[in-house]
Every structure is written in structure tokens, then in C-alpha cells.
Length: 464
Image (cartoon, rainbow, N blue to C red; front, side):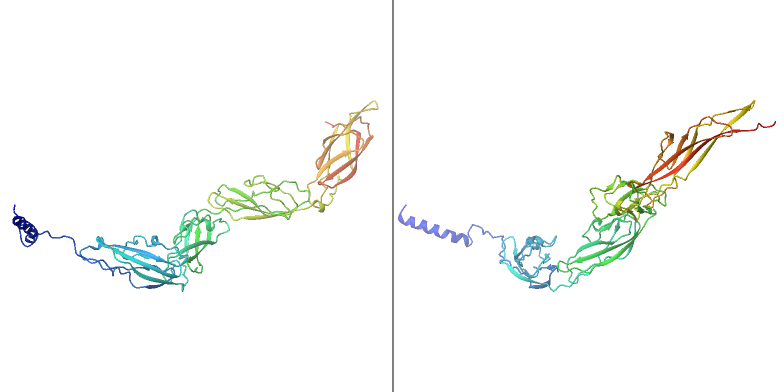
């Protein structure tokens, strides 16, 4: 090929692209991508609000390419700066209105400035951030608690309270604090027994009949409301049982330890079976709870062991399976042995026992039966103790070893031996009898003379 031919070929190749682009045989390829500007984020105007008020952000003023649908655009909100000690984060944007929403909300927890950024993204580009400042003030008005209307309830059934009418002037979210202010005496319901505490609609289960007073205090994160009160009048088809702890009173210095309490007079108007619960309300000074107590506080008649003398107060409550009675209080004053007074023995005075035996005669000679053995009662019931102590008795006879049926009770029986009888003659024996009584630390004695007479007598035969 000549040099001229080479030059011609190079020229053709150089102008070929221009020829094709100007209507040659090669077709034109058109682009399908939109030619859009970068989106513009608009976070909205700065805001002022009190602490506890819900803040709603608005990014609807943002601009993006009209070739993209709204659901293809993502909003990204963030906290650039929050007050010191604030715990607010992006996670606090309201439920279902997250940081990718165009109108999320959040609840500021402290006064101060919250600097918030907004960025938007379309499928092709991301915007520069736009900022707004939310200034939160502490000029907060106290919320108002509303415990709801007074109502009625039934024993053993859940009763719902309603504090939903409580409000905050700034519309802040409220926290609910319920309490049991007063109950019937028979109830053991406490604030800790409230179900769903912290909500606007908690409930209680009354345990006995009567009037229950409930309280409600709300707070908006800054201030507490005044308490509001409502009552629940609780009724029951079951009538409450009645506890009777006994009459109490002074117990003598020689009181047996342990002594017995008695709730026998407790009763249920419906005839239901009762269970018992005893407790110590107060004890004398110097007593030790490790040393005193009941053998079984669930018995109707428990034994109570005491460690020091003085005033003891006990409480009894009974339950019929549905309701617990009001408590009944009983007080016992246990006397000290230092205050003990001596008892007085009384053996009943000198006494004479006449035993007769039948006699008969033949040829002017008298023959008599023997006087029979005699059981004779000695009565010491006239003995006494000024403190009311229980007395111990001991009977004895000086010198003569007579047989006793009993000698340690107030009424003792001694056996007087029989013997030969002589007609119209008294055979006499005298016995010196001593009665000793003891109350626990002090004692006293009384002596009497018991005269035993054996006499022979003649009884005329009956005439037919």
C-alpha cells in the first residue's frame, strides 16, 4: 500500500464516529436514569416546650426529586446534643413513629436545649443535615390526680380502680402511685397488695366487709400532685366472725407458768367453723421474746409461757374461711412473788364424831356389837388466799397413824377405827388434826381437835 493510501485510511477512521453520531447507520442510545438534584432536608422551625410535654417533629417541608415516590424517601432524625444528664436517645422516638418517620415524637426528660438533625435519602442521593433546636423549660404546672368515683365491692372479688381522669396541664405523661389509706379493722390489705400498681386502672381484692379508702398521687416527671381519695364500700353475703379473747384481769403471784388463754366464746353468726390466731400485743419491760411464747397460737386455748411478771396484752382474731374478725384484746396482770400475801388455813373448828353400837341383855348381862370403822370428812374449804392463789392442802394427825382416804384436798377423808362398845358408856379418843395450806411460796396452818366416841346403846324391839 502506498503512503497516500495509508493517509486516506487514517482519515476515514478518524471521521467515522462523527459520521455515525450524525445519522449514520449506528442507532442512538438514550439514558433512563432521572436527572434530579440532591434532596433538601427541612427539620422545621425551632420549638419551645415545658419538661414532660410530648414534642412532635415535622420533616414534611423537605424536598426531593419528584421522580421518586414518598415511600422511597427515608427520614433520619438524630440528637446532636442533649442537656447534661439527659438519658434521651434516638430509641426514645415514639412507638411506630421511629427516627425514619417524617413526624416522630419524643418526651424530653430535663430542661435545656435539644439539638436535632434531619437527613433525607432518596434512592440516588443523600441530603445535607438540617438542624432545629427544641428549648425545654422547667416552668411546669403540677398534675391533677383523680381517683375516680366512690364505688362498691364484694369480699374476695377483684375491684377495679380508675384514675384515667387524672391529667397534666402540659399534657405530660403521668406516673400513677396508688395507696391503701384505711381499711376495716378486720382487713389485712396493704398497699403492697394492689394489683397492677403504677397503672391508671389497678385493682384490689378486699378480704372482709367494710369501707376501704384508696389514695392516688400522680407525677409528671417534675412535680407530684396532691392526693385524691376514693372509697370502696365492700359488702359480703358472709357475716364476719366474732373473736372473744376472754375477760383477762389480775393473775395472782403464784399463777401457774404456763397459763391457759381461752377463746371459747368466739363465734360465727353463720355457724362456720373457725380458725384461731393469737399474738402478743405488748409485754412487760425486761421480757425476752426468745423466752416467752405460745405452745400453739392456732389453738382455741393455747398455753402461754411468760418470763417476767407484769402486764401482758394479747390479741385474738378468728377466721371463718372467708372473713377475718376484728381483733379482740385481753390483758392479764401477773403479780410478782414479792407482792405475795400469805394464805389462811381453816380446818373447820373442833369436831366430835359419835359412833353407836347396838347392845342386848340376857340375865342382866349386856352384850354389845363393836363400833364400826368410820370414814369421816374433814372440810378445809373455808381456807382462803387474799391474792386468789390456788392452794395446796395437806392434812395430818399428830401421833396416831390413822389411815387416810385422801389427805391432799380441801375436803379430806380419814378412817376412824372401830372398837368394842360398852352399854351406856362412851369410849372416847381424841386426835389433834393439822391442816396446812400453801399458795406457792407461803403457807399457814390450822389445828383442831377431832373427838371420836364409841357408845353402846339399847334399842327397844319393835312391837308387832
